[in-house]
Image (cartoon, rainbow, N blue to C red):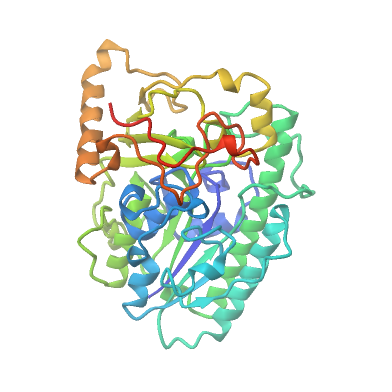
Length: 459
């Protein structure tokens, strides 16, 4: 079967199938035809590491993508899904955003390096960041044109990636996105600043939804929808404070819907835990390709066969670098979440790891720099879905705390986590902000770490 991988940027679960009042009718229609995963999580709340985890089936600290690709971090290209599928007779094509090599608009860098043979992407050189959703539209049309001309001599793997809903959001707010009715996610304060910003997010999302509709419609018109596995997902949470670049559920919780033709699954929704790390082994099982021994994920192909499957017992996520060094690990069960910050020398908020936005500016003006992180967090997610009540110091939770600590230790040992050896040393090819930096992009050289800086390791 063909495989079509559709992915947005920084969307989290902010789509209508998860209960949000946003304009995503095409995404909602697809989710009704697919299996919607209610509890899917990324392996990292930052762009390149998250995508690398999904596309290689191993964790960022195993595949080399410790930070952003445009900041010098490099993926092990041989592990990439496009390489695996190309070597198994697939035609591989990229259309639009990738973030595993270079900057995410530098689509041409992925051709011939990550396993992609064909570049369907339009030129984006004349677009500002605010206008890159127009590039998404061009790319959707290019993909539709390719599908019309597709000769079916080989099955295809196509990655269609969108800039939406990444910042910068569109300058002009769509007429349907009333600022007054654009209340942001509940963990963000509701005021005129945040409502206007969220209205811009919704404008970006509406374009993404339109593109999904165009592509799915074309698959159906050309009678190849039932020959194609379609994956719809995003890399991590939305680009607001306390979401993206955190291991809270707002940072690692992702939309995920997968349609497998002739699926025997009788429901349209799956409640068990699923990690992005599980997607590659599942796809290989679906299309009948032998799975490499090194894969860390667990196939959930049983779901599509109509067999009993409970999901993962544990999902693991990590941060190493986004713009600054912030080593964090987490383990989550259905009920509990444990987060460990390894840089105990700096337990303030890493401000440069929060995308520049009016919302960030609001929080900067209202004490963001004074907030402190705890070294450890334990949350009971049945009673604390917003992860605000840290239970580490509660006597009655010590057995659970020790259990979760041990599970994280086992994971780090089994995956040869570099933090086991102490702090990660900054290499000469990496661009890393100082932990105190406010903005990611600064012209002041004092805002960047010196080579060989080493701090914040395992204790």
